[in-house]
Structure formats: structure tokens, C-alpha cells
Amino acid sequence: MRTVSSTRIRNQERTGTDFMKSYSIQDFFLEKWYWMTGESLKKKYGLIDMNEALPKSVQLNGKLPNHLFIGATEKIGFSALKQATLIGGPCIMDCFEDFTLESIIDMCMILKTAKTLNIPALVFVGTDEEQFRTNTDWRAVGTRFEKACQQIGKKLEYPHFRVIRSDQAKIKKASKYFMNSIRSFSSIQEMADLYRIGKWTAKKEIGNTGDIKSVTAEVHRRVLATYLPSFVQKITDTKKTPFVIAVENIQQVNAVRKAREISAKMNTFSNGPFQLAYLPVPNLDGTSRMYRSIPSGKIFLSENPLHLEKALKKIPSPVFEYYSTVWPTEFLNEPIKTRQDLFFFIKNLKEEILAE
Image 1 (cartoon, rainbow, N blue to C red):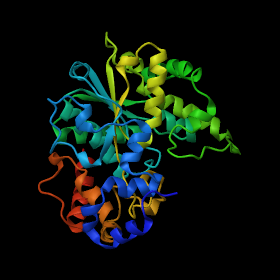
Image 2 (cartoon, helix red, strand yellow):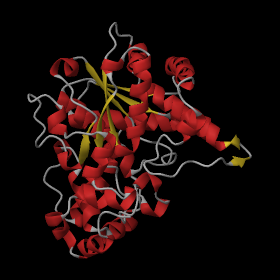
Image 3 (cartoon, rainbow, N blue to C red):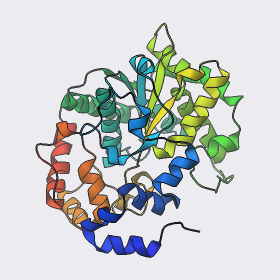
Image 4 (spheres, helix red, strand yellow):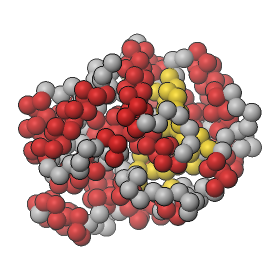
């Protein structure tokens, strides 16, 4: 049974920007996607407020889009923060030919949070996982993402990060080693359901590529390995195991929790991973996450300007609220106040991100 009135939401969609006066942007989308409010989701996964999780010396106001962060898995002490490495990565599965707006936002969230916390970051680009899943060469996609991430870092004036591509020989070797450890702690079904927030589970599907659920499980184990502090230590050649903070959308919460569970069994429990979880990027009509949407519900960076302008005129107020307030202040000459402002911002973003 839904805990929030559907009629109330439909009424708020019709009232335009007034919906924010009585209903948070988090609740609006979380209730649509997961049938939970922000508070009920936080309770289910044991999340605490961002300001409570981080040391008081860390000032977040005005630096991060706090209204889009749902919460953190636990408190992170000042000494842990000083030794921390921040990790995260955009999902690239729907970006073979072009960047989605979501993929750019995810990279911005990672690097801007790292800059705000004043810690180094690793941005993972899962080229090898997608190649394993689709048997297609994703190395060119990895190169595009690497360049885009560098452009975002320049715009943020934040150079303290590395792009980690999973098709690199060193990363593939480390992934294979840690995957074997993860396999003994995880079943195929558990891995297939790793990114599901809800009651339903993945079904066994047999096709020309064999057991799709088993393939999915292997891909998810590869991703899970990247959260392990011992994996981060291995690929960065550091003497001490770092504290790992994952900046990911809430859809990754089970994966980070599972990595922490496995990490505990590998005797690095106190080093995380911790998670700072934010609201996923909505599709154009707000009915689902952009990643899960059909192509017509997504924004691609090389979108035909006429199509983009027309699509942005129709987006509901909560979607506009997300798209217009998620960006780092370093990206904005002035606030995005109208859909026309948003159109020109995205159009200019393409030129800046794809600049050589």
C-alpha cells in the first residue's frame, strides 16, 4: 500500500513550482520510483543526514546540492576523512554512442564532493564490465569518458583525481583477484539482485548468450570489487589501506553495504566503504530514473537542439528543479531560473565537455 497519496502528487504536478512548498523533491521521486519517502528509505537502510555524518569542520552549505543528498551510511570521523579516498563512477551502459546528461551529472557529483571534502578521488569507468556483458569494444567509450572527466575537473579547478578504466591491464588483474574472494561470499541470486530496491528479484533468463542472470552476477562482482578498501589500496599502490567513501546514487546502496560486509570478513571493516547517497537523475517526465528510461525519456549531450528545447518545455516542475539545481557553482554564471536558461546551459555544456 502506498504511504503517500498519488492524488496529492498529481495535484502538485499541476501546480507547477508550488509543489516544493509542501513536498520535498526527494519524496516526490522516491515515492514514484520506490513507493517510499526519503525518511522511510533512510530508516530501511540505516542512513543518517549528511551534516550529521561529516565532521563539523566540513561546511557543506552552498557547496553541494544538499537537497539531493538522501543521506550517509554512518558517521565519518575527522581522522578517517584525512585518510580517505573518494570513489564513484557513472553508469555507461546507455552511453555507447553519446553521453547522457545523467552520466555527466554523476561525474560532477563525484568530483565536486571530493573537492568539498578536500580528499582525492577515483572515478571508475566500467568499460570491461560492459564489454563482458555485450561482447562489444568499449575502449573508445572509455577514452571519451576519460577526456570528459578531465574537462569537468578543469572546470571545477580540482586536479586531485584519477580516472580508472576497468579495461586497463593492472585494473583487470586486481579485479580478477578480488572477484574470486567476493565469489565465496555471494550467491548468483544475491549478485543479480544487488541493485534492486524493492521486493521483486531477478528471474532466470536463458538466451543465446546463456544464463543472463549468471552473466549479470559476474558483472556485479566486478563492480563490487571496486568498493573494497583493499582493492583501492592495491590499484593506488599505497602503504596503508585507505578509508573509502563512495559517492553514488541511492540505487547503489545494497552494493556498498555488501562490499562493507565482505570487507569486514577481510579484516578492513573500519575502513568502509561508507556511502554518501544522492537522488538518481530523473528522466524527462519524472516517472523513472533516466538510466532505466527508454531513449526518448533521456537527454543526450549531442541532442538535436530543436528536440531538446521542445522536450525541456514539457518537463514537470520537480524534474526542472532537479536539472536546474544539481550543478556545481563553478558551472554557473548565474542561477538557472527558466527552462530556456536550462536549454542554453545544456547546449553550452556540450561544447565545454566535448572541448579538446
